[in-house]
Length: 362
Ligand code: ACO
Image (cartoon, rainbow, N blue to C red):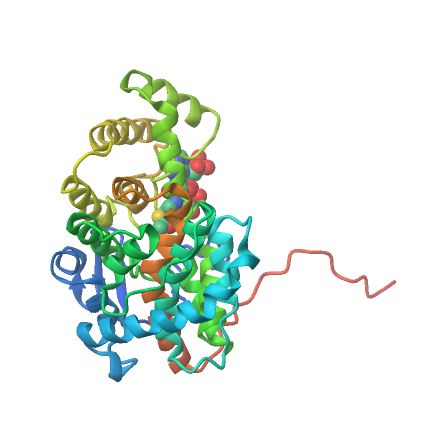
């Protein structure tokens, strides 16, 4: 069926050309520059994925080892810039504090802006996470990998290999995903030539909503509220009957299972402890309930369901789930910003006016 050009959600509208990633919603496939997600997650570190996404956009940062080294020193630069600003974020939720801190980065920064945007994320998120518990920020280790340094800056302890590997898989898995809402927001802002930091801040604002990157915290809330296998069906039926959405299910593009869910589920399985068995029961019952309640639409598990389980299993508080999503997704945002800047054309769609018209005869 041809897309409705006036659809409120822009379903099916092609708004940009990109060589960065593609989401095939019918086949349930995500590719990053031609490489399928399962191969990305199996064999690439987050830094390799960043280099892959920036390929052809920044020739100086075209391999993972160079990105790892440059990100390390850019994290140190970010710490010097952002740590003094922390008191301004006191009392804000971490995702709001992150919005505030990123806004302080200047268009005059001496470090390449896309590099600094990626580097600043774990520095800001860990400082905000520690501040929420009354603790001082810890400086980065410029020689560490991005995922390991995030965990070290957050806890002050050397992280375990399993946690580093799971977080690295997570960051690589969510690094880019076609023209999702936050990436589109970034491209719109970049198209006005407002610069990388403004575009990234706008993207974060879009990510924060519960229909996009704000979903994983509520996924855990749902598991907590259900609490017991015997309560699953009743809880789900009550929510659906009252018109509520089940967080972690449904997707605009995927008509089949989101491939990222399986990559993350496998990563959760490799971690000990956690609540995977109960979550799998809730998932199965939720899919059955959605199939009964929403017969016109295939609603499947999306990335956020297993994001919640993975980030919980490595010990992160749920207030950091959306900020940690931004640590991964900023890789894609910056690639799309650089690609959009190359096109040089402002994104400026039209609306169909349905308001009153002046009475010219009066
Ligand atoms: N639970 C219950 N019903 C749902 C869900 C859900 N999770 N998702 C969609 N529906 C229903 C809607 O209520 C609507 O029903 P109706 O036709 O009876 O009114 C129908 O499915 C179509 O809904 P739309 O809003 O048109 O679907 P859209 O493609 O625009 O939404 C979205 C996609 C926002 C992801 C949606 O599925 C949703 O809200 N899911 C829950 C939040 C979530 O998990 N977000 C994370 C997405 S992944 C990411 O952004 C990283």
